[in-house]
Image 1 (tube, rainbow, N blue to C red):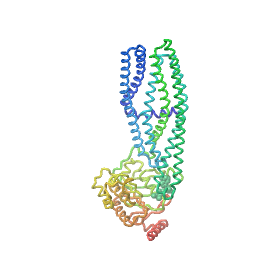
Image 2: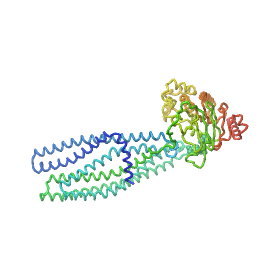
Image 3: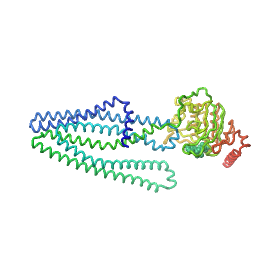
Image 4: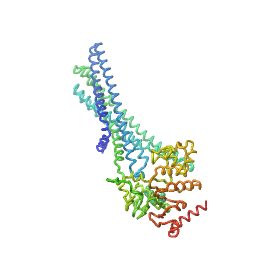
Length: 584
Ligand SMILES: Nc1ncnc2c1ncn2[C@@H]1O[C@H](COP(=O)(O)OP(=O)(O)O)[C@@H](O)[C@H]1O
Ligand SMILES: [Mg+2]
């Protein structure tokens, strides 16, 4: 399992390879600082042997100057290493974040139904942040420790073979508790992170649903539920820090015992004249460096494993294939017209493979004409729109535009032919201008205003606190349902598409808004191929044809008057509406 994990990290290496120059420079800085660190040992040796022992003030001065010089070199090298390596970490994680986002926004929309958006967001933020710290610090610590370990070991062997064997045995003894406790600490710290994430998502949900919580007076229960999460997280954190404290205590006692033992053996050698005091000093210095390197490596290995997990999840996101396949040789949309045909379309949503949302449905919408879809809720009306925009592909049958199967068109080309006004239009948190311009960002202010006028939206926009610059986000102005729909209609008018997909608002609008929206829609529908999901008979009067859907089937088609004769379902729907109207 781990070996597989590390190969994942290597795959992410291709993001690093975009910065070969920086990578090489960072590598040089790493090796340089490792070398300088080792040279410090020689400084210690000279200081002791030539300075103290020889009793020469001049040599002591030189040795001290040597150490200062090395310290200067070390600080320059460390500056370069820290800057370059952290830069790489930040740069690469920014690139990965961008790559993942770029990929995500091309995926089939159903992906986001099957996967919680919170989880996807956390991959984009926490997983990339984890990678950033690993590339920017843990990995460089591991590499630096690796270099100092090898170099230190060689110098140890040169200085004193017997003592080196001693050190290596000591290192192993120190490693045992690190590996043992380290694993436990890691498991606990993962659990600890998970529980913290739960705390966050719980609080997030409650804050979003605050009105429901308060109106059902569930504050006390929610407080208790939250307390459960918080205390759970605390308990795991307590276990983790206990293990960690234990680990530190054991390692410290082992390390200092080992150093004492080494000094004792080495001190005997110095007394017997086998080695000089300076050599022993340098030796102790290298031994500490070697042991420290090993400790560092075994510590950051856990981080590397976590990063491998994060990398794996990110690569997984990057490798998801959209179920909406692009044509290998796309047809052009130039001059294909806007006649739409659904031919014997059968479709199941992926999450409901046994229940057809549409079954053997055939519809024709002639160029420039309008078709209304009516039927009870759940009949499959919105699903028709989803297929027309190719958010899904039908399981059987075809959808054609002009004479071309829409699978043969690039989705981008297909979608630029049409504009959608949704049932409950959602607006972006920019200003009104940004929202109307969404389908045509290069539109001039005059064009935007003209579109807003045609959508009957200009008057109310003018009255907003800052007119077209009024902010519509969370802290911005709130628009009513009817106003939002008119902004959406203005957006569609500005896009000026050949094909219009209108999903009428179901929520009862006041007569004034309804009339204004009606007028706006009529402006919009002129000379365009229109499919309209109609809930109000007023809209249906002017369309060329009405299709009645029920349970995914086409049950009748014709004009209003024809359908009143021929379709019992249509009659019932229109009677219900009539009752509602007169009841108001
Ligand atoms: N994203 C979805 N995943 C699974 N089933 C869906 C999805 N959207 C709609 N459905 C189901 O497909 C059927 C048709 O829905 P829809 O086209 O939204 O109906 P309408 O717009 O006519 O009210 C319904 O049974 C609905 O529950
Ligand atoms: Mg619907």
